[in-house]
Length: 347
Image (cartoon, rainbow, N blue to C red; front, side, top):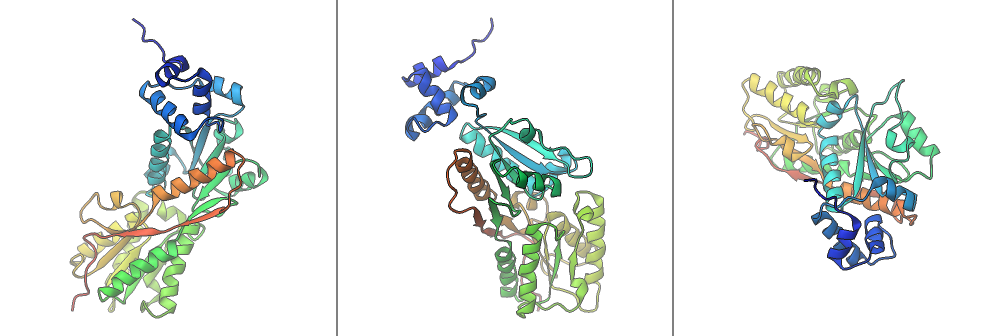
């Protein structure tokens, strides 16, 4: 026997409202109270009711769907990044909690790049842009100044930005409190705002005399290709770590803007007979869930991914409803997660 499809009539009966009220609740109309709309959407979720997408578009000329655009040479690369993956997870979770339909595009920049389908086919009412998606898409978004979109960790008309400088300074202060002054730093491509801001925080600490850099090699900026996930990044990071750790005067701590780089530094140190954290402290940057999956659990500066996505979605909602955004640039702080790679300087 075929399973009966749940319709708006079923939701209306359960909620004790009209079909029109169900339609207004599911489309986010301001003609129904927030409390009643939330109750109707809760009942719809319990009944596993999903509005017919085409019907919604015809009725309101809006899709009632939002998009998320990630950058990556392919889906596997994009979703393996310890920046993209936590943001996408928070985005999907938030959409599910709010019964919001969504669409995700992986955008590959380059000479043959194609604009995301969600934009060109009007499949969403607006998009959240995660990180740097390249010059072509960025220029297109600037031309489409009426297309609602919010960027995460890249500057745009509406954006949510990590307070990366403060995050790095906090990590440095924790190391200094444990007796560290000789601290090395491994950063990423300076094309990315997040890496530029983090690097700026470290350089300010050096200029202020909080951190001692005994050789230029103690600061290493890895290029875009090296930051791609895979053996190349690990090999280059290990070579760099070996070079600074075998010098006559070596750092007692290393801050790594990336979990793979931090893992490579730990590997190189262990290979050289050092104990972590007795002989060397290592601080990573990235999701604590990823940083602490393997041994040793990395101490890490973690972005507040949930708050970033929440701020971006609230901003996007205002834009899609035609409301004024009073604070078009939001700054979100990081937090420090302790781990097994942080310790006092050996005396």
